[in-house]
Image (cartoon, rainbow, N blue to C red; front, side):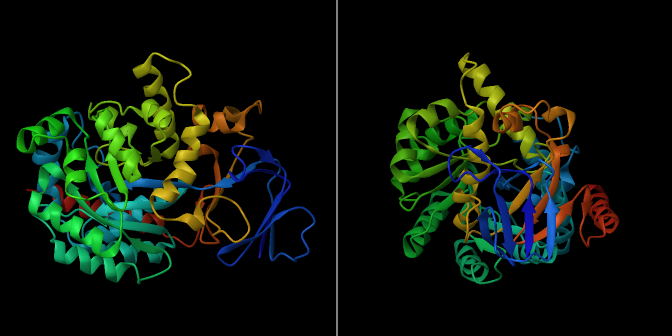
Length: 420
């Protein structure tokens, strides 16, 4: 049993209110929130005035794409994907996915991220990497015209939803522009068979939407709605080039708009209309995208970019309130990923927690803590990251992990797939 005391608590149980309650965890669960706990702790952690809060959840990423960090920069999406990424991806093996994902997990943990929503290949290796690291992963499929199949997607769905408590699986496919209508219809059939949400890249670039309109006479969102893809909800990664009709569909179907401002800025894809989404009551989650297009897996930078780009896009400095963005990166992302037990700090919830160091210069003086996390916070403020009741990162150290071996393995994979 672990006791966190003498600090501040942002539980998100009641908006962004800050309290001074203690939090106790036992095994994987939160067992006490308050004062004067009757239990006896195995370890007591004196927060010394620092902040305990729910962890960040990365609602869209491609973890194993750490191989592509800074090897395909300063290119538009189509050239980045077709000329650089796809050729290197073709050389990847299952073992490669394991080693590259282990590297990504280190970066997630040091950014206060305890779970990722990963779309990639070789799910067996990804799941093993996640369990070996003690990290929480929700997986979905990169199914398209060239890789995987609807049959394999169903096999993955059934296998990895019964694999380990740290692993779950959602239906998904890569994107409309890489996937035939027949395959998308097959995915929609699975959604109806399992009453399950579906996740995909959608409306990331203007050319993507224009191409879909040329092919089908409608936007990707409208096409998906026509096919019944989102009848049980789901999520659309990026959601940059969406119109009012698309927003109506999002609202009607409970579709999550997963915002990835770092990637969208770097690839010059555009700025998602987040302000309009919030005003419309659209579900919002936050993801970093992969290290090939971001290039960091840093939730602090992501939150800041979301806030800043909305203010630029709307000409309104009050657009995209920081508290809304912070909640989207924690509670919103958790709900998008189906992690309803990992969303807030409350008795009975799973202990996926982080401690933020408020004694660093960027967090002083202490005024509005929640807003300061978004506007001034950084990875240097992460003192501790706990996943499923286990501390995996504390005071700059990764617990029971040979990081040098992880670095060596990731570099070896990268060197091999870059070679001609």
